[in-house]
Amino acid sequence: MHAIDITDRWAAKTLTCEQIRIYLENDVFSVETHYDADAVSHVAECCHHIYLWATHQLPAVGSFLTAVIDNDLMKSVNYADGTNRDLLWVYVIFLYNTAPARWRERSKQ
Image (cartoon, rainbow, N blue to C red; front, side, top):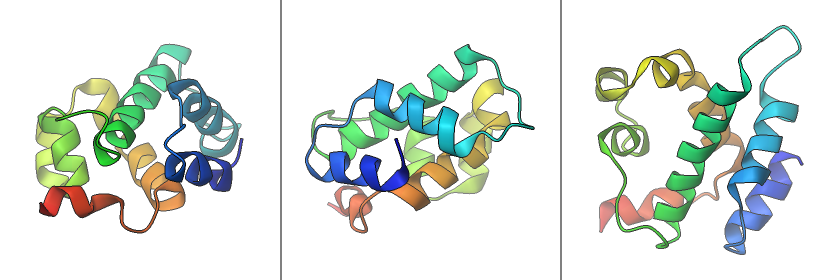
């Protein structure tokens, strides 16, 4: 599962949390980066919530994910739990590499 596969599934509104987790494990976390499976699963679930929100399949997300969507670093760090604070860089990579160009439009509505 590569970034283009995630983008295609996002656009088709068929992206699953499991596909995101596989992408994160295979393409984002390097061999030198060791995080436990629970942390990776947690971030995959949060990324999936962003996708669901962006595709109008979830009405709202929490404070942390709203700050991530709004590209507000200070609020993101403030609202993040320990896992999300340590892995904030993963959200940046995920959204930069996989989200369709106009994914944030919903936040402007």
